[in-house]
Amino acid sequence: MAKKYYLLVIIIFFSVSVKAQKVYEFNSTCQQAYQELIKLKISNGLVLIEKAKQQNPNNLIPFFLDNYVDLVSLFFNEDANEYAIKKPKIEARIKQLEEGTQNSPFYRYCLSTVYVQKAFIEIKFAENWRASWDIRKAFLLVKENKKMFPTFTPNDLIYGSLQTVFSTIPSGYSVFASLVGLSGTMDEGMSLVRNVAYSNDPYAKLFSSESAFIYCYLSYHIANKKDEVFNFIQSRKLDLVNNHLLAYMAANLALTDKKIEQSRSIILGRNKSQEYHNLPIWDYELAFIKLYHLETQEAINYFEEYLFHFKGNFYVKDTYLKLSWCYYLQGNLKAAEAARANILRKGGTDTDADKQALKDAKSGVWPNVTLLKARMLSDGGYFQEALGILNSKAISSFTNDADKLEYHYRLGRIYDDLKKDEEAIKYYNIAIASGATSREYYAARAALQVGEIYERESKKKLALQYFEKCMEMKDHEYKNSLDQKAKAGIQRCTN
Picture 1 (cartoon, helix red, strand yellow):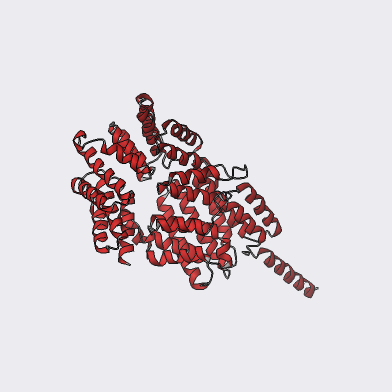
Picture 2 (spheres, rainbow, N blue to C red):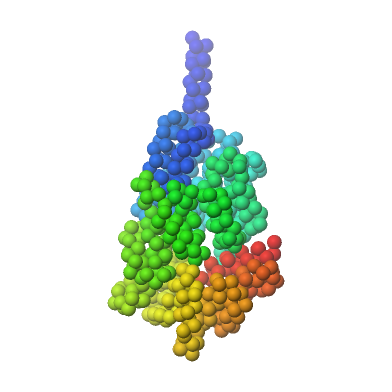
């Protein structure tokens, strides 16, 4: 009897142990679910996630994929009520992932990825301190995973990305970075990300859309390899029709790079199926496309549509600022003032653009119409039209120092975009000399741009002088973002 009882205990214990074993199995169903999610076909992805959970309740990969669903919704929509509901679920998900077997390369990789995604969400909801510590957790996890599984390619995407970003942390955040031990080298970080983006490794191919997204943004904004980004998009034949994540990335970068028609074509040419997650961001992008060509009424319509659907705080003040400019350019001062009043009441101030919008609203001063039109056209890539507007005015027609400073800066930017470097440097230097102590950002940005011109010309010593000059300027608008770009330039020139 005792022997039978002993055997029964062993069987029960073994059964419980087997049942409790949590694994990381990125099987075909999970891979299909991931591909649907990364295309932003969220509903399809959720169906496949549930299927994978039923196939093996002890497989943790479907729960890992649940976090992608929350990331897309919370990052793009920024709904505070939704965050209140999902925040404890994300915390519980981390605990769940920690139950998995630690001898799998996916154990630390999944946890690291979720911590990074969690940090992105936290930044959107102004929980910057919490986000920083989660980034640190992610960095330490993936660093350890690289040591344990050096040939596991997905490690390099996270590790390389974090290294690249850490290498350019602006001075405003450097104290915190040193406290939590964040550091990195741009060259090493970008090399790792680039290798994943171009790799034919099976896992690299699985995560190819995600790696393309990250590689393009880092290459454009930090490595300053702008032409390389658009060549990559074209040569790799990225699906900008059926993959909405890649379509957003390509359209957004094209808009930033003043390739307006290319951006418009991508946005309007994407698959319009109801299977895709509905993002207000498309209206936001189209609004700028219209504004940059001074099609103000169409811009107003898109901005208002965006504000109606968007639930968050990032760039809301800036959106109302642009809306006020549209009405102002139409000569509708009453509507312009109403939009400006919303800058004071709505949105947050976590971004430099929102801080600037609030400052403009509080000033009560409207921009010079000539300069505003030239700025919009220049930002849209309509350089000859912008140049024509500025050349129609003599410097003596501008009555205050701020407008004169902007006039020279705008001329510098236009000639810069037209690849007329000598003329660009001439006007940039005037802006630097006259605005070095100004609270306006023009002088600091002019120094950054001259640095990038000299960098293109392989005159690295001169480039470094101007990047350092940019960082030396104090108490101006966009200080953190401009310092980060200048620091990135210094990294590029010294490595």
